Every structure is written in structure tokens, then in C-alpha cells.
Amino acid sequence: MWEAVQSYPPQGRGLASNSPESPKRAREPNLDRRKVFIQRKSLLDELMEVQHFRTIYHMFIAGLFVFIISTLAIDFIDEGRLVLEFDLLIFSFGQLPLALVTWLPMFLCTLLAPYQALRLWARPRGQGTWYAGVGLGVGLLAIQSMVLVALPVHVALVYQLSPASRCVLVFEQVRFLMKSYSFLREVTPGILHVKGGEGAQAPSFSSYLYFLFCPTLIYRESYPRTTHIRWNYVAKNFAQALGCLFYACFILGRLCVPVFDNMSREPFSTRALVLSILHATLPGIFMLLLIFFAFLHCWLNAFAEMLRFADRMFYRDWWNSTSFSNYYRTWNVVVHDWLYSYVYQDGLRLLGVRARGPAMLSVFLVSAIVHEYIFCFVLGFFYPVMLILFLIGAILNFMMHDQHTGPVWNVLLWTMLFLGQGIMVSLYCQEWYARKQCPLHQVTFWGWVTPRSWSCYV
Image: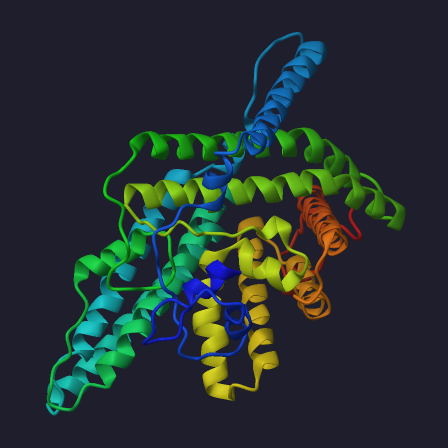
């Protein structure tokens, strides 16, 4: 909690003093509070220095070895050979080169359009060319938005990209949109408040280019930097991320694919649904932990190290949360900072400081829609499981608030996470195989949005 207070001190003052009242003041709606970047390590890096925690890490590695041995043993017993097959991994990353080629125009539009628009707006006013420049800047941003929105969708639908290749496009699409908005939102007010007839100083192009690659969604002219790059640390994190990818493939291939492929061949029943959800809780929570470790720790730390980005607080101790409100704040600090700064705080500016409830609901609504869009884009069908779970999470956010402490509430939160992951894995896997087993002869809107797993069996 103290790190959260440090990250958002009131504007014009130093870091919040270390007093008992600081956390209480941090919960109050202060519209002048801004994200402050300081040099600090990721929490898991600090915990890895403790032998007891490293043992837990070694247990997960041992689990990966068990999956490998299990796969080899089953293949040897069934087919008489010792070969590791990665069909699921190859399928998931099918047409990856096409996704990378599509990424290039998306990146160029994001690199050029917002910065050039800002330079046009920063020119001295009082001239007729300034208004033309404003219109041209708006046009550039409109073109960028159309490219970022339409191009990935067009490529994914026309070329039928595989799920992992779609992940690359949709994550970069959302990331570029969020970074562009942050850049314009942070810099434009200062330019527009310059007196007429005077030109404003636009940020340097190098600072904007650095921002596009550094692991944060909040733009600043400069960030705290480390003195050197530890390339062994970079290689270690990329290797761990790759290991998590193989780990996830083994989990899906051994615990999910056989079960849900067979379910699509049987009639839909409540009993089968409940049993499948309970079966999917373990692989679901494993997938949650792997995504967290691979992306929020390994991937972001690798890029932070290469770019000498010193603020490594990409997450906090979400596993100790006793309320959903604290879990949402600490699970993904990178996205939380963006939502807090540009949805919650701007919502309070528009609605008034007393409208904390509507501002908080707007954060949940934006996050739910974006998450549902990502799942829809990656899987290729609309099945609003994530949207419904987010609405349930919004209710739990108000029921399980920060005043609830103690181990019982932490156990309750983990129980809800287990069940939630089981519901997601079970329902999405069932729908995936149902659409493979029972394809539509004629694609219609209602056929696209109606769950196929409720009526399909062969």
C-alpha cells in the first residue's frame, strides 16, 4: 500500500511522508495525484533472494519436468516412440510472420501520427495556417485510429490467423492505442494552455520513441534509468517466458484438449458442465500463474532491462489480497495506472469528486469491454464469459472491500479465482470444439453470437 502512495504523490509536492495517515489520504479522490516513477526492483526478484521462495519456484520447474516425462511415457506406451510433439504450439503460432508484417504499418502509424499531430498543434497561433494544422493533425489521428482498428481485424478474418498470432496483433493494437492516448493526454493540455501567438515546445522525438517500447502506459518526458544492461538477466527472463509457453502447452494438451474434445461429442447437460468446470479449475489457475509470471514479470523485466527502465513495479503482492478491490489494483499495475489516470481521475473531473461510484464503474466497464474484445479477437467468436465474470467482479469489488482483512478473506478470494478460471477455461474450450465439430453452413450474425456448445454434439 505504501508503494501505491509513493507512486501517486500530490502534484507540486515531494513523495508522501511516511505517516499512518498517508494510506488513508491515498484513498481519497485527489485529482492532482500523478504517477511518479522511481527506481525499484520487481517484487519477485526480491523474493527470489529468499531460499524458501526459490524452493517454490523449483517446485514449478519440477512440475514442468513431470509433464514432459508424462508426455514421453504416454507416447511410448501408446505409439512405441519417444518423441515430444508440439502440434498445439505450432498450430497456435501459425502464420506468425504475417502477423509480424501486419505489425509494421501499425507501429509506423503510431510512431508518426500522434507526434506529427502534436507538432502541428504546437505551432504559434494567430495564423490561418494554425487552424489548418489542427485539422491536419486530427486527420492524421483519424487515419491512425482506422489503421489500428481495421487492419488487424481484416488480416485476422481474411487469413484466418491462429490464436497466438492473433494475440500478437490484438495486444499490440490495444497497447498502441493506450500509449497514443497517454502521450496526447499528457502533452496536449500544456500546448493548448500556451498564450496565443506563442509556440509551444513539443517533446523530443526520442522521448516518444522510447515511450513506445518501454514497459509503461504513462507518458513522461524522462524516466529513471539504470546505469548498465545485465544481458544475462535479459536472457534469463526470455528463457523463463519461453519455458512458461511450453508449460502452458503441456497443460492444455494433457489436461484440457482430451477432456473438452470428447465433451463436444456428447449432448449438453448441467452435470457435464459442472464437472468440466471443476476439472478446469486446476489447469485454469496454472494458466493464470503462468501468464502472470511470463508476461508481467519475465517479459516486462526483460524489456525494462534492455531499455534501462528503472521502475520495475509492474505488479504488487496481489496473492496476499483479501479484497477484490486490492486484487484489481495490484495484479497488473501497468494497466491499473492507465485506468486510474485516464478513466477514473478524468471521470471524477467530468462528474465531480463525489461521483466515485460511477467513475469506478466506468473503469470496470472499459476494462470488461476491452478484455471481452481481446477474447473475441483471439478465439474468433463472441461468447461473453469474460464480460459476465467482470460484472460479477464489479459486484464483488463493492462487497469484498479493503476493510475486510484476515486469512479467511484471502482464502475466499483464492477460491473465487479458482472457480472463475475454471469457468473461463471450461466454457471457452467447450465453445471452441463445438464450433469445430458443428460449423455453420451459412455465417450469420445470430449464428456468430449464439453459443454453439449448447446445441452441438456429434
